[in-house]
Length: 138
Length: 150
Image (cartoon, rainbow over all chains, first blue to last red; front, side):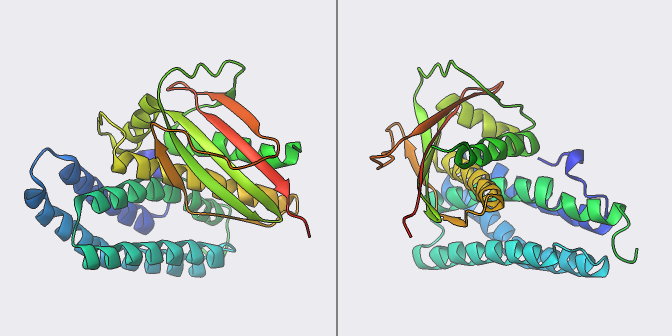
């Protein structure tokens, strides 16, 4: 799933993005396999538990970096992060209410795939661009 | 319908297809719509009101998800339609940012997906059809927008 053109040019952010893509890919490959749902469920739960913690950590690290380089789009970018985190919480609430129902998890995965690619290929690129233009103190 | 309503959707589609899918999009006069479509309907509210409908040939939706995920998928199931709805959501979000540059402040609704049957644009006004061509299939965007009476 990862493509080198997704690199932002900031090593910490790029490493975290690659880890995110690796986990999302593992999750999607497990989810799309022909195995019975009960067998896929362990991998699905494991990845979702990891993502919950890692995504929050990554968003925090990325926003910290933006503050460090005085990135002018920090406020908008934080809102994009918190809106997405809010949507993840909504899915979680549905998982809690309905159980890990396959249809719902497939829906979550499709959204996650497209959201992550757009966010990294588009919105995050602006951070690297700003830093390379000599933005902020770095 | 005014060009300044339509251009932001066209520009946003070009940009999103390029950045997310590495695909070039051009306008075409020949929409060649013979296969079933997957459609995503998004409502617009605010200074402009109405809706935008994205119609994708089914085979194209599978190819879009293959480009993003690397996985071969044989039918537009909820994984595919959800990814597609998000792509339409991203295009519409970017288009709304474009509309803001023309001083139209608008919001978009949650996307609604239709597989195998066509969505209703629910308008008595003008609908502008924007047939597009890409290397993996030809989508059409239908735009029905009017200024909200103040």
